[in-house]
Image (tube, rainbow, N blue to C red; front, side, top):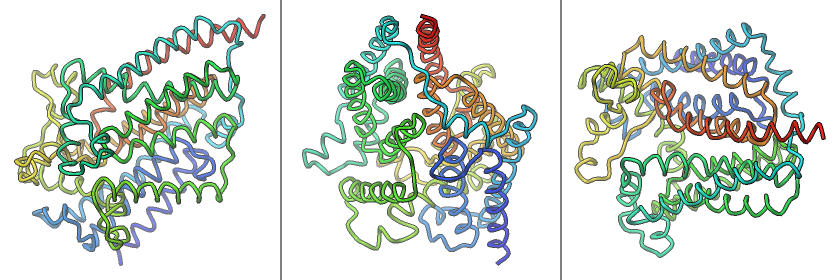
Length: 452
């Protein structure tokens, strides 16, 4: 009862703080902080953390934990996260004079600034070149993958899908990794959002055709390896683009419809990809889609605490990004892979073991223990709040809007993936540089158009 009371009080307090930080926690006015709160923290982490602390999870991962005390220790750390994270953001906002409610509402209703068509020739050439590179990167990814899981599934070959997914993810090395990750996986959806915004604003045939090509490419790169979450996140990116441009007005009826449609699609994917057909698997809180959402993402955090407290020494500098680790003359290792090797060695032997990603606190603890957890919470909260404020204050052009939407979706995903990406992320840096160049062209031609 005490644990539940702490959990309930924390949820109420955290909700209040996150609302002050974001400007709105309403699902009809979604934003970066809203998604972080609902997806990364509450649903993917804190609900499952409560079940684990109460000992009623009955989850296969937690059954591999050797020391039961980490149920409570992990819950305490998650409770600290729920309060300290938004509290830090609130302090940053106050220092910068940020009024979240006013500034987000202004941004939401502000019209998108687009270039005048007659001055868009150079911008279109640059955009077309990037679009071509992205489409080719998607094609390269599919051709480079020996066995494309989505194609095998469509052909009816459902055997060894798990192994095919592992092979599809690991069949890249060297420069091919960057081609896939930066120009295929990251850049293609963002460019499609830019094209979508221009297509809805200008009605020009060029933008409609380019959007269609980029949309198809984005869907392919999202589903080719049968990962379930990327396609959902891409759809949410499109919805956010429609909301932020005023093309879509969300209400609870529409949101209910989207949730129902998304749940149906998720069920279909589980049946087709993993062969789950029993109704109880879909209704159970610790298996199927529900278990995947509330327990699968947070359970590895508790395994991190157990593993790096007793089985493996703290990684220290080895847990930092490779760019920083090389300064200390050590090779980077990912804690999520080490936990998989330690807890599920049989999966490694069978070749089906990947990584056990979890909330960023896991990787922070694996590197520097409890102090690392506290520092990571404060540091990442500051970084995210600064990004949120900067984007709300930048000109609302299609390029900036697309980059804002990209971070709005990918930061919550990264929060449940690790901490090192917040210190150095080559994909984010490269994407920002590329789109920064487009923004310069976009802003230049907007100025010309406005003055002509």
